[in-house]
Image 1 (cartoon, helix red, strand yellow):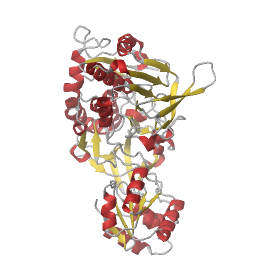
Image 2: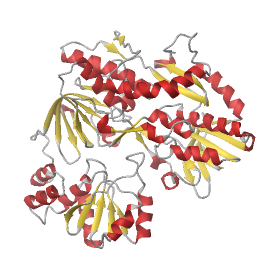
Image 3: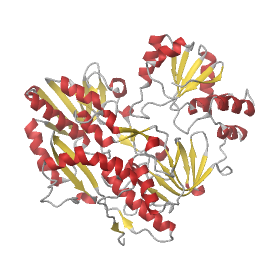
Image 4: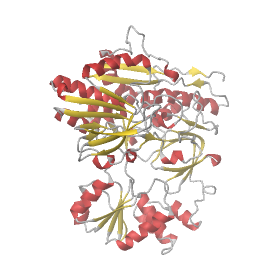
Length: 558
C-alpha cells in the first residue's frame, strides 16, 4: 500500500486489501472511498468485502465505481460531495490511484486553478495533464488536437493474444515501433486454473509479472483504454491521453459478467460457491473437493460464447475423479446445469465424454441457465428454457457449486465503432482484419469469428495477424487465413484427457496422426501434453513469437 497525499484532506493509492483497513485507521484516516468497479481483476476483493473490513476498523466506506476512461462530470461532483460529507481525512483508491486523482482534479476545477491542480497531483506522482486539457476545453477531451504518442503498431491487451502477436510481429519485422496497452501488473496462464482447481498445479505457477513478459523493444503503456477513434487512428486512454497508430490490434479479452447472476458476487469464495474462472477461487475449488464427502455438487455452464467451452465440465470430471478415488462418489449427487442443449459442441468428442458421465453418475440438465444464487441458504435458481416451451424456473439445493459466469465483450469495446451488433469486434473470419477499418486487426476472445475462445486459438491467430499485418505494411493483400483452429484438452480424469482439436464448423484439426494420439479418446499422452508440455510452450514459445506447429492456410476467394 503506497499512500500518496493529494491534499491534507485526501490521500490515494492503488488497490488495497481488507487487512489494510486497520493500518489506515492507525494512520488517522476516517473514511475510505472505492472508485474501482468490482470484477476488474481475478484477485480483486469485492467492495462488499472492503466495506465490511472498513466497518470492523471503524472507518466509513463509500463505493463510487468508475469505469476505466469514463470519468463523468456527475461522478466528479458526487466525489466532491463525498469529500464534503465524509469525515476526513479521506483515503481513496482504484486500480492505480489514477481514477481517484482524476475525480478529485475534475471536482476541484471550479475551486482551484489548473496550475494548482497539476502541482498537487504531480507532487503525488500523477500526470493529470490530459485532465487539465479537458478542464481548459470546458470538459471536452481535445482528441483531435493533441498527439501524446505515435507508434507503428498499437496493441490493446497484454494477455496471451497481445503478447504473442507483438512477439510474432517483432520476429518478422524487428524495426517496428510497437506499444502494448494494458493496465495489469500480472499476466495469468488461465488454462492452468482448471488444474489448480483439480489439485494438480499450484496457483502461483500460473502467474508472472507483466513487465517480465513484454517483448524486448516493445513499449508498455500501463493504462486502461477509454475509447477508440478509428477515423483519427487514435486510442484514448484513461486520463485522456491520446495514442496514435498506423495499425491497431485489438485483443483485450472478454469480460466475466459475475453481476448478471443475482447474489453471486456476495457469496463467491464462501458458502461452497466457487469458480475456476478466477485465479483466487481455483484453490477454493480444490479445498471444497477435498472437504466434500456427500451431498449435492452442481456445475454450471452459461450460454455461449464463453472462453474455453470445455472448462465447466473439466472441473466436474476432475472433482468426480477425486471423489471416486476417495470412495465417496456414491454419496455425492452431481448435477451438470448447462444453458445449452448438448454436452459438447463437436459431436466427435461426445461419446468419450458420455462414458465419463455414466461412470461418475452425473445427471445432465440441458437448457438450465443460472439466474440467482443464495449462498447462506445454499440454493441456486435456474431459468429452464427448453425448445418450444415457455421458460420456467427451478430452485435447487447444493452443498457445493462451481459457477461459470456469463461472458461478454468489455464495455469499452461494446460501445465502440469497432463492435458488431452483439458487441464483439467485427472481423473477417479468415484474415482477422476488421470488417470496416483496413488498418485494424483483432484476435483472441474479443472478436466475432465463430471459433472456440481458447489460448490455443489465440496462438494460431497471432501468426495469422502478424503475417497479414506485415503483408499490409509491404503493400500486399492479406495472404494468411485462420481456419478456426482451437484446442480444448478435456480433463476427464487425473491422468487422462480427451484432446479436442477442431476448426470452423466443427471440422477436426488434429495436430498429431491418429496412431500417435487419438484425440477422440481419453489418453495419458494428452494428459502429459497438458501437464508437462503446454505450460512451457505458452511461456517460452507462444509469448516469444515461436510458432511451433503453426502453418496458416492461404486466403481463399469468397
